[in-house]
Length: 173
Picture 1 (cartoon, rainbow, N blue to C red):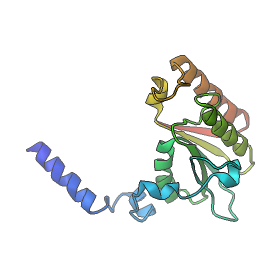
Picture 2 (picture 1 turned 90 degrees about the vertical axis):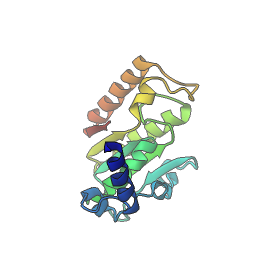
Picture 3 (picture 1 turned 180 degrees about the vertical axis):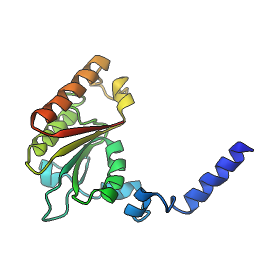
Picture 4 (picture 1 turned 120 degrees about the vertical axis):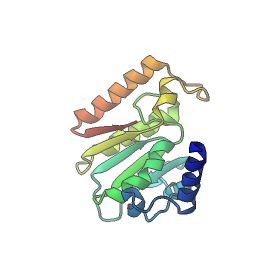
């Protein structure tokens, strides 16, 4: 009986495109389309065409927040857009956690670009959001997979690097 009730509630929520009373849903106008966030290219920041996804701040605004991470950060960006009036910039690359000196060469590259971008004086906070457990356990599709020691070491180096340039760091798990 309990599973039937949960199924009905879930289906009802899906049909209504989310729960209207949730503040995140109000902030984004109920658009839960994951693909919508991939529209913007990172090329204006990275100067490289690649499989990246970014959210660039509105023209003429200096964002206070920088969101760094993999596709999980991309999914989180929709919610951020709903509650951050000051705007934010997202720099992401698929299957790259945004940690300094961690992962494939293209992952190391996007992490370096993000750290360089964070040096801008108007960026106050860096938000790290990724699917952390797969990197902690060694990402099996990545021939550059690191072990748990490398992951924890890179996480510490990354957080310290942002703090050393005066940024607040938020770790989203």
